[in-house]
Image (cartoon, rainbow, N blue to C red; front, side, top):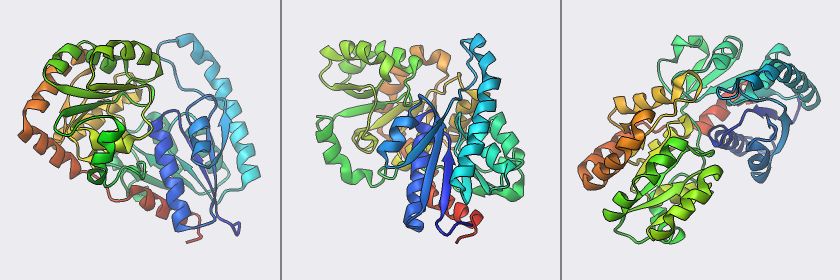
Length: 367
């Protein structure tokens, strides 16, 4: 083992993979100062910008996921996978990590597989209640699997599983204390009802279209918005909101802690990390699971929360017809908001990033 702890963290593609990876890195640095961390991500994806901004080195792989819209583009995937595994082997040989962590996303598979083949301790962080096929395969060979939900022994070897919860951005804590600062940040007044609308870091067409179709109804009922549209829909949404002074629109929200603090309710997709953030925020939520994800895992995530009466779930195909009325129901029913917010808050995990970092240190045999 190297005298200085070295950890390689692989994965990315969306904020739902990147922010947990950064949270794990920071927890490692707090628990073991001086730890050297190298990220491996996918070229031309968000991590190549966000990880350096967080102060970490990153290497990019020429890898992408399966396209369900452009089937012919999938013919290049085998070659990309082979090249990505080859480059991962080179990076691991040069960096010589004490352990490798996979957080999901395009780059996670090749790097974790290369580490496993070289018999480097490997930890897999599974965010969802239903793992994709890549993680189910890797789980057979990884040394430790950190999960957010009970019952995961259906997919992974029971003796490798540790329930840690999903790590989230460290700033999403003590939200009540930030309420006044949040209202000032978004130029909102206390006493109004504001809905935070999220479609993930890349935007969500169904949610955007559904919100666009009910702006008049929301405005007539004095409901304000903090709306993250993603880049592709931002210009159109900004034009629509010119006549609605209580509504704010952004392509990407950098201060999510203030967005949660300013909101009275949330409309969102049901990605694992967003759901984990909603648990910590304790906000009443309407979840619209994306159908365009592997294994339909967002629906499974959402139904887990709904099973605890912690959120309203609307099918993607019915969102344009039902979302506006669901928002009105939340706005008018204080008791419903109290019940949903209280129940989802009970599902929050305590300091998942530190729990995962502890498992990494155990694997690296340096604890």
